[in-house]
Image (cartoon, rainbow, N blue to C red; front, side):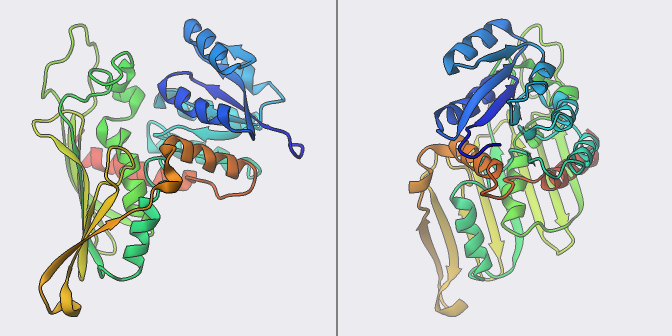
Length: 355
């Protein structure tokens, strides 16, 4: 790319998440949205007009032939990610793949194998978005690395919703969320990639050993005419890592409780409790410890996380990280190797649950 030339970005898939990405790339002086491939012709026309996109098509392969395009953001359902991602890389375009990376670990391995044939190209996932790219991640990692809570032996993240199922109550037109063959899984898969990205990252990626798990659906009525509903509504797992860490994890898009996103971390000298997402939160971390160097009374301190550099939110942060990486001025935000590692854990969870 010529010096001072704007990065030319294209999108495959023009739905809700694509529009969230587009607003950031459109508003940044370093980038320009050149192309969009979308099967829905009305959405294609309307989105193209909104962002002034010159190259509009219903065939994504037409974008691959456009020599002006530098990078492609893939925002299709996960069942299409592997094939499209490989096509993008073979066309010599940088690849930004929405999460989850692929529908299965096998597909992720195929995509990673192809990416390694093109070391000159950026290939990244997006499960860093609500996790590693927001201020709580380095804040909490620094606390743990400082030794203030001792050795971490147990993590307990939970997020349980009532009637918040993608494809039903949330984004009801996107019925593909309900089909495991397309989506890869339910809340454990859709949001689990964020959970693992955050929690395992702050502990320097411990090596997974084994797990026990459960998955269930059919907990509530579904709209008339729903043809496929093969993803879990509620799932949980006890993950065991080779360093002894235990991770008891629960996610639900619909269950008979309502538990906000909350993580508890237990260490030998103290503990932490927080909501790791950066939205709908007071941005505080509770620090539990014992006074007088561990010999006094139980204490709690509420720590404030500085969010002043994150006022534009997670989508803006991921866009900034992608642009810096494309310019060679920053690291790959979420390497495919890490995405694969987390998908392998999720696959083990589903197998343990006989799901």
